[in-house]
Length: 153
Image (tube, rainbow, N blue to C red; front, side, top):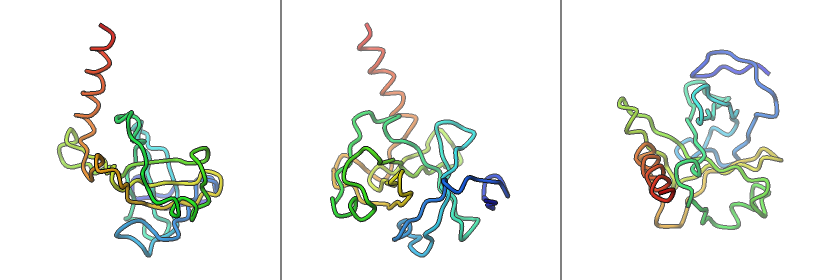
């Protein structure tokens, strides 16, 4: 299918990249249809609205920079999108990229959870107090590398 995107203009995407959010994304509740796109800049993804071309979110897998990240969300919310376990679950954090990209942050308090089989998703609130709205990705990666180099000594 042909999709107009904020980042790349019109592109062809596979129908299987389409994700339905019954409740939308927080702050964008009326927008329910998106496509999940690989970004050329790894390890990022784009969640592009099919309803409003100007609405697109940059996503990242939180485990890439916080290996201790875990979900603590209401089980009913997972069941609502057809998830009973982690097998078919994709978890992303929404990334905010300011003018100084070194200060980019990820929202670990509001993960985007997708059922990879049914392609239904939702944004939930993580009830674990460790996870905040702004985690500085570059600082977290540096701490992760530092910890890895110290453990290899």
